[in-house]
Image (cartoon, rainbow, N blue to C red; front, side, top):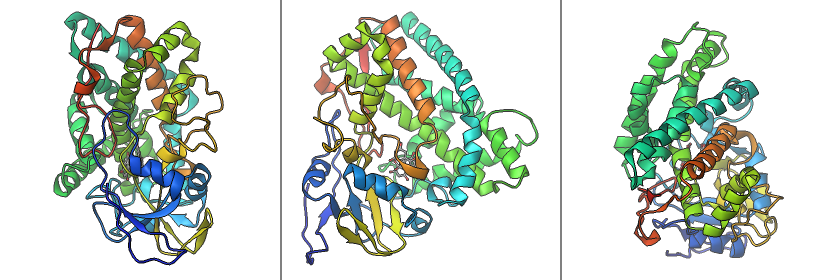
Length: 407
Ligand code: FLV
Ligand code: FLV
């Protein structure tokens, strides 16, 4: 970690060069921790793109920036803003680059796929998928790589079901998702994966018109027919949901399993008090550093004061949901994994209009995973010393490479 000081005036903080080291386990990025406590509204330069961006780390400031319409996602598109990845994840016209009211129009379509009724049926389906995966695990016997056997296929099957992607196409989805959500695959490979995945969803949505089906590709096709979405918006939505559902949940849920495997008292407590599971999942969501660095910025459309500092019009601004979740003003003893935390307004799924549309499904998947694993395999434990687990390198979303377990 290096910090360069550029000439600055008192109201223009220094620019920290953020090298973004590959971190191990659930270690918290030391620069992020320091900025939260010492320099909460500051400026950073990341490995790709140009110039600097503001970085906001305190809970209240993060919430302020993520809801205030003076910070725009639409204005980000086409600008070479300093960033972690060599490419941008969302496609042109995608919901990630939209502001209200366009953004609201797109999100309303997706909300249909996450209705209470749809979620009840997804919960039943999740338990069936999980039971099948664990049957196979039992047949094959220990030891195994839980990442390959459960954490990868489970969310991939769930989001594919939601989307209407046939089972045979799931490996293709996994490959594209992992290549797109990567800082290390290289710009060309990631852009190619984006284009191929977009072509796939253009075809899938294309043959879902008028089918009357409830899966998301059919809902998107209907929205195009009704004139609510154009094709580019529909495909951009599908790509973001598919990659988030497969990739982000794989890693986050693997980090949850790892956290329990390495916190035996927490695991024992959860097994003794199964009713604690939803609250434990919330605390794991707060505690786990989901990603490296920061994701997608916003642009200040006018001068805006944040935490006593004026962010000038035209400047890009990042928020860190990771530091917000460790802000001692909101979470007493934030470094402690505490399943008794009953006031837990974490922002692990973001905040404001871009709040994760799949949060309910992600929670269902995490609950079913943690409950089913230890119900079926009460002796489940790491098969190697914790220090031998390899962690993904050049990642945007953090997680283990493999999770060797035995029982
Ligand atoms: O969807 C986004 C996202 C998902 C995620 O799992 C982690 C993230 O950091 C992000 C993000 O930064 C922006 C998204 O649109
Ligand atoms: O990790 C990122 C990300 C994840 C995601 O699921 C959707 C996104 O739009 C993003 C993103 O824009 C930047 C990321 O680093």
